[in-house]
Length: 200
Image (cartoon, rainbow, N blue to C red; front, side):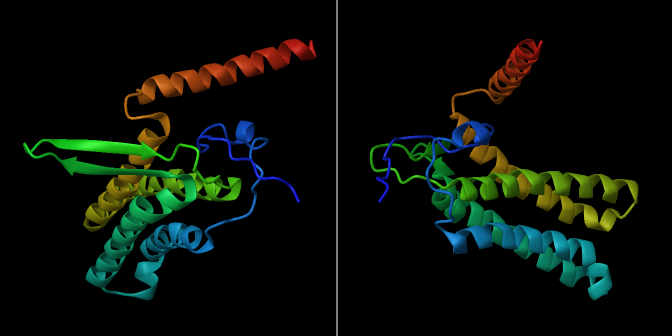
C-alpha cells in the first residue's frame, strides 16, 4: 500500500503542469459533480446552437437556455466548486446593510486532496464556456440577430460571474488580478529564456 500524503496544497489554476508531480490522485473522486459541472453549460450551448433547427418557438428556446444557465450557475457556485477544487464564494449583507463579497479556499490539516482530473475538468469548463458565450455575443451582434442578444448577455454574465468569483478565490480576495497575470507571464518568460540559454 502507498501511504497517502496529507500536505496542505492549493488547487491548480494556471500551474497545473507544475503541480502534477505533487499530487498522487489522478482519478475522479466526484463523478456526479463532474458530470453536472459540464452538463448544464454544454446543454445550454447546444440548445442555443440548435434551437432554430429543433423548435420554431423563440420563447421556448429562450426559457430553456436561461433555465439551463441558471442551473449551471447555481450548481457551479454552490456544489462543484466546493467539491471539485475546494473553493467557494458568496455575497453577504452585514447587519448595517453593507454588501460584502467573501472568497474562500479550503486549507488546513483536514483538507482532502483534489484530483488533477477534477481540477482540470473544473477549470477547463469554467474558462472555455465564457469564451464561447463571448463569441456568441459578437456573432449575434454582427449577424443582427438582436432578439438573441439578451440570452447571450445572460449566458456571458452568469458564466463570467462564476469565473471571476473562482479566480478571486484561487488568487485571494486581496490580490489584484493584474498583478497575478503579470507574475504568471513573467514566470513563463523567464522559463523560456532560461531554456533557450541551456540549449545554446
